[in-house]
Image 1 (spheres, helix red, strand yellow):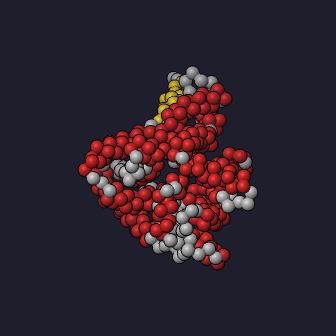
Image 2 (cartoon, one colour; image 1 turned 30 degrees about the horizontal axis):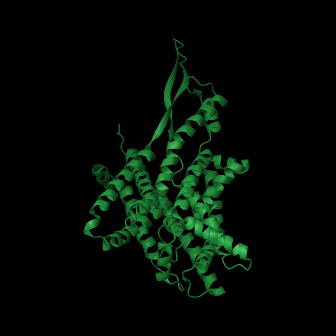
Image 3 (cartoon, rainbow, N blue to C red; image 1 turned 135 degrees about the vertical axis):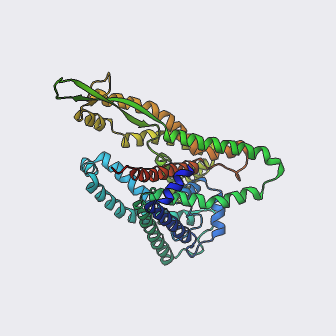
Length: 425
């Protein structure tokens, strides 16, 4: 690995790309520490310590909501817009045709995604402010209309600024810019988490620390194993030689089907759905109707129960893993392309039987990926319930993002090095 890093550093384009990414990370962390006015940061910290859902939102924003900086929303609005267009492509054939239209179609979709990011950022900023306003811990020091409008505009501009930085990073081909920004936020928060953990650490917790270290290493190994795991479906391509012998042969290949095709998208879906009831309930805790106020308080109390929250979280992650896999994996299109190219799965008829076979295979291997994602999602909740300690809670989702981003960046750097490893004749 070190040889590859040294080799990458010697290549001017790769070295400049890495230095540019480092510079953009510094810019990102500077803006992430510029707080917006009118926010009690001490009260905000207490609120995040007692609200698991807000902690997950902070994770996907790149660690910027906790400090409530000018880039507090992070890249969450852009992620939401991307998911919306992926769903629209599944529902509307016209958008699906644009997505198939190569690079030109992808540019149009990217432009529409950026445009949708702006209203989504406004909605998310306003919704987050309403959550803070309705929370039991007084976070907003002032709630005037002008102040709220100013904060919403600043948060929207900050989100678009990060989107611009992310696209600049992606152009350097050393990793996905949006993923690297989230990665930077997680890594930047690591020293703070470690300092909090060791502040309350004493000699009686050595065993607990050892257990956490083992689980931490096992989680990293599991993330790498599942992220890189794939099922190779054999594919045979017909080939005919028009020569003196007129022989007919074939080319053997394989179709790789990944165990985890969805990344952390199912976790994002699950968090969004779990947040919805609590956000709505907070608006009705002071309702004039007694039954409505009681129902709202019941919802808030129910979702604060760690066992209920963890069970729903796990079930939704598994459900959305299957749901999103059906969006990104389209066996009918793959079977059609194989048939056009003269390819077939040995023992399976081309066309619809091939699509049905591929769907049955992906359903079986997705089960393992879905259960793993569900376990990763509830790992901090389970660790806190078993040990009774939240200071060393292992963020499975954070590990999943960090390891996945590192693997993706290494692959992109290796591909650039491979392009330059050729012999000149």
